[in-house]
Length: 264
Image (tube, rainbow, N blue to C red; front, side, top):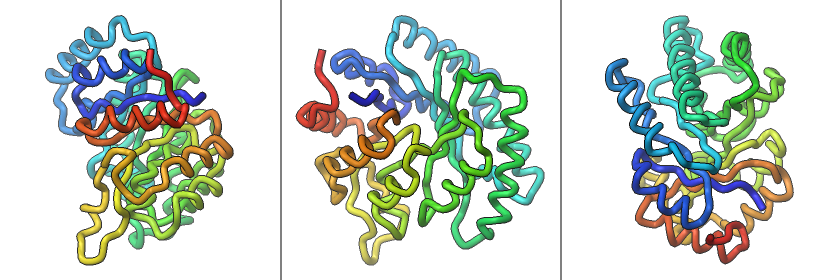
């Protein structure tokens, strides 16, 4: 039985009853905004500490991600990305989270894979040099057209504190290959999964609209097949449900039907 979490979409208080009902963990997403100022951050941290005070299941944090790029040639962009990741690390520590989901910021067709990966490896070496082993960083695919950049990055860094967060919905909506190919090629590099559904690439529709974050019953991803492949290729990966909140409970019921979770 995989460890399952629910993404709170910044609404922790609303999601906690579902976590309790189905005995699941939580992914805290209330710190996604890179423009949070110091005074508001502490209040937000204390608010989440209070909400999660008696929470006994697994906790993860989604880091800020807008306009960051950890493999950038621009030293200033790399510096602000490093500062942002360090901020997320401190928030995760204060909340007792054991995983942080981050984005590469890689934009297809703007950089050569080899040069970008070299910069990314240097970034991660610097990031990890003063960190312990209590938190694993999970790199989520977003705009990547295939798995190659993530695969080469993970292999080159070669650190157990760095794994892939496979966002199944992003792979289906933005990439040129199937979810099956993502899973079978990344294999146990995958330590975390964002699970939601959509209708893939639709002719005449802007690409950003493909990422619908629908519930598991609403879209063209074969969810039972994806779950089967995840069990076969990365059986220890944490699965975090990241669909629209009004479709969350139906998705949980599907996972229950598929024997992925059991209601308390």
